[in-house]
Amino acid sequence: MRKLLIPLIIVSIVVGLMSVFVVKEGERGIVIRFGRVLKTDDDMARIYGPGLQFKVPLFDRVQLLDARIQTMDDQSDRFVTSEKKDVIIDSYVKWKIKDFGQYYLSTGGGNRLTAEALLQRKVADGLRAEIGSKTIKEIVSEKREQVMADVLTELQESANDIGIEVIDLRIKKINLPDEISESIYQRMRAERETVARRHRSQGREKAEVIRAQAELEVATVLAEAEKTARVTRGEADAQVANIYANSFNKEPEFYKFLRSLQAYEKSFNNKGDILVVDPNSEFFQYMKEPNSNVN
Image (tube, rainbow, N blue to C red):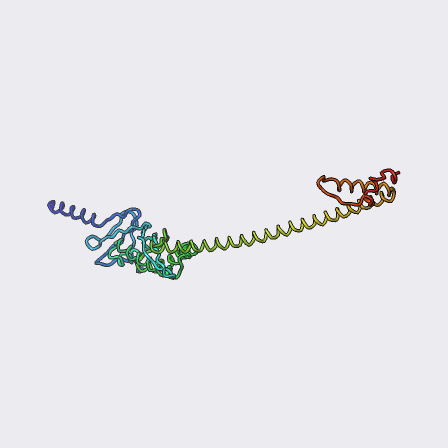
């Protein structure tokens, strides 16, 4: 009897060890019995949380799956826009297992590489559909957020068939192939030069308008000044004439004498001039009889 007790104890210990398993924090376990995932009454896979769990030895096999959020840093891929231009897009996806039973069956036993290969194909299909309906300008600046949101929505629906929940999708980088970049830069440079020429033309036009206005203002000021000068000069000449007239009326003989002296001064100013005048003419009356007519 004692000889049978020891083997029974050993067998009990082995069976007991085969009946328990440990699920670590951040993991979830599912049990496969006779090649099928063990399910609950509502036809969902039975999930074993962290801690010490039990199973039927020999018949049950435990598959531990990572329940944490995973990051799939996708490699760069080339897509075609609505303009038939190629763009190279680098993206990443945040995902986690939602249906552990479905995930196990669709990925060939919970293989993460298989899951990411399937997810990568879905991401590429979603990006290709969205980018194919957008221009480069829309993808780069105007509708980049919308593209990511639309692809994420579509991806969340299509990833259900592999038991995955897609949490986020982001486009990290958008590049242009070398053969396209140069043509894009040339077109942008041409557009900027067109804008610059238009601004320069508008500037020249405004400059001509300002110059014409300035010249008009100058001409107006000069005309007003000339008008004022002529009026002032006319008024001064009138005053001078009035003074001469008043003086002439008061002392006509003295005025005639003064005018004769001024005429003599102008006539004999240049010694080289030759003046042929009759000595008896009225011009020399004050030279012949200087005191005869002066009071």
